[in-house]
Image (cartoon, rainbow, N blue to C red; front, side):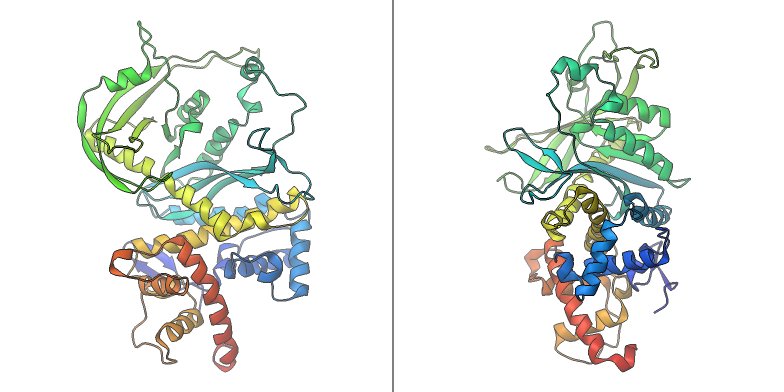
Length: 477
């Protein structure tokens, strides 16, 4: 099937599925055509069997050795692996007036691989863990469709000879702290956003860093952060942030779906919403000849608090800070909805770590692992995208997500027939069938299939469709 066939469905252009890895990585440039081809081929093998180790995903020993050499090659830089996917992500973003850029950090634990060199410490000194840190930005529509990875940095923390005291840590410039990752990703995000698309970066409490608000104002980009610090305000009385927002008028109430977490069941929560505009007093920072004092920042704050929470649960409370103006209850609710999209990156990390089993990879060095992890992060995005394209565009043709032989092999397996249907199946139908291969029962109470059932079914589909191709060589060449 041609790669340039497009379907226009619900105001979006969707490229028909071929070898999606070849399309997604078409513009990769590693300085060698053979390396480019090997990268695409390895990506396709990892995508077909995301939970399998490299040697199992590859067809034979020769292909396995070629993939190992790929991840050993100094020319295969992580930024070059990610670049074509970033370009495709920008193209997908152009179809939306506003895109959320959700940042978060993932910790990859390779402690069980003691022979791997170049790893850094994770967790506390008592835990004695080693691995890598990955900070990513996931582009999302406000409805939650994952469009791709915008930015990504993977590194090993240095092993400090002696831990710094709190006073010594305060003396360090922001550029020398790990928290600079939020500013660096924000700067990269702004550079990657297409013209005409409004960007809003969404971050959790770890990103409550004053310099991040300053950077967003200087870059003139949207920012939404959940507050963790009760900052001083620039008023004669030097009031505090939380008390000021809590004293704001009640704007209204909102129903929020609270997912199951930490042993607490899923529930519906009624929350109150308050908002106001505040101006932060700049925090103290050590002054250096090459720096200027931090300016005061005016920002809107939205306080969400659960009303009459059930006993034995943690009441829902979010204090959100944003430079996107909040003047009405409707705008406050929209900011809350933006923040609720932040959980998508946590689920994406689950797909990356559990679905792709990346922490089981044994490549010997951190440098090789980083190349492998970068490629796997693109595979994980595709698996997560498959879940949400089903939920948002269920009636789109199945050729959006599957090649011709794939959907035919899937249909034959599920329906125990070699005869294709008269009408092309929809995305929703084939995703349900894939999930069925992964254990999804499809009962009325089950809702839409989740990522776990889909990634399990996807691996089975690879074996089924490969056998289908083998038996029909005359048809598919």
